[in-house]
Length: 306
Image 1 (cartoon, rainbow, N blue to C red):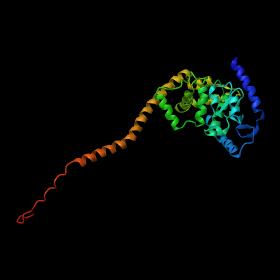
Image 2 (tube, helix red, strand yellow; image 1 turned 30 degrees about the vertical axis):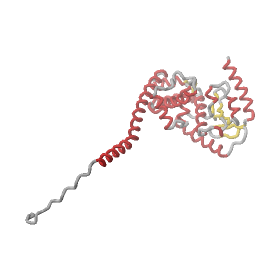
Image 3 (cartoon, one colour; image 1 turned 90 degrees about the vertical axis):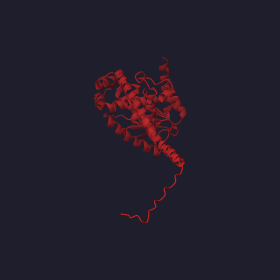
Image 4 (cartoon, rainbow, N blue to C red; image 1 turned 135 degrees about the vertical axis):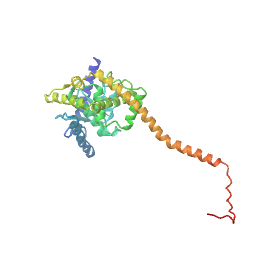
């Protein structure tokens, strides 16, 4: 009951806030609403985002004719008001997708530290998946958005392996429809989700292709696909068993991390060890006593040399 109240309240507030938001730009994939005209650099960035979206849809193989509505919020106070009643993580986000309104809301761009294109791509993927699937798990949503927005760099990958080796990981099956309660666990949840999607696509490419072909077949019928049905039919396993398999995979990765760390440490220390050994040898050589030079042999004049 309380949840419904917050949803209704947020809808009323949203209606009041974006009453002054008008259509400012339309691209091949996006409809941009804002209170004031869009600057030329921002317009260029938004139009170039179409290339990323087109490549993403081509990679997945499911194309949409709809345009995603994006609201560029003018100030942080309005953004915080829009996040009222939603998950706590939304308050700290740079943007969020509202499933009840089918809209993407973006914090004032000047206050966003991350790459703006990646932030928008992340939220677009949430909107995209909502147009295709019913009841897609949260880890799949965040995994797809994080992975295909290219928000997992080498440093994040190493952090993920490090945390896995230390026994820290997100139980994605348990968190299928809710975020971790603690803020410090959010980062690992995003990384674990992205790695699960990467595992689905790279380690099982045939199943990945079958999965999206099934989703596309539903789309051609103008209906949403059941995520669970597509997953079970394509991967021939349950979501629970898949997560058990993925958990074993992360354990193997953690041992690889230990091996890589040991070799990296060895590579760093080897030149130091060789230098220390050279210095010790040099000191020992310097400590040796000086030996007399051997006297030259005197050859007698009456000796003949053959």
